[in-house]
Image 1 (cartoon, rainbow, N blue to C red):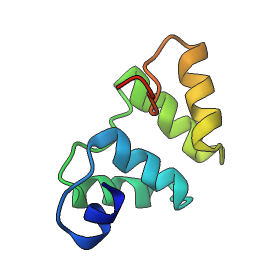
Image 2 (image 1 turned 90 degrees about the horizontal axis):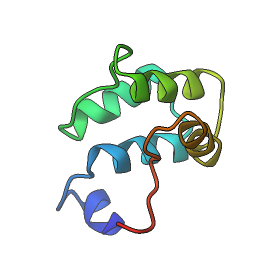
Image 3 (image 1 turned 90 degrees about the vertical axis):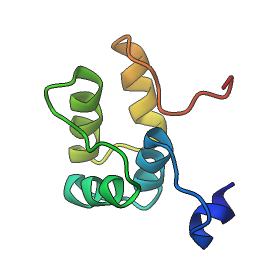
Image 4 (image 1 turned 180 degrees about the vertical axis):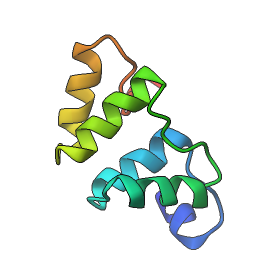
Length: 83
């Protein structure tokens, strides 16, 4: 799957694009650009889950730490091994 993304054969979903941004240590501006390039909606600060993700990016948190914060606040995590 990830090889197809890097070869340009497929586009990542929104959460996968966000996780990719975490892996690349993108700041908020870079994350928004990556989401636009992936053809998915940007992070919107008025949406609670997105606001949490933005806060985590701004504070230099990892994807795992972000998932912990999302879970703690009752929001859907980025990585869901059951899906």
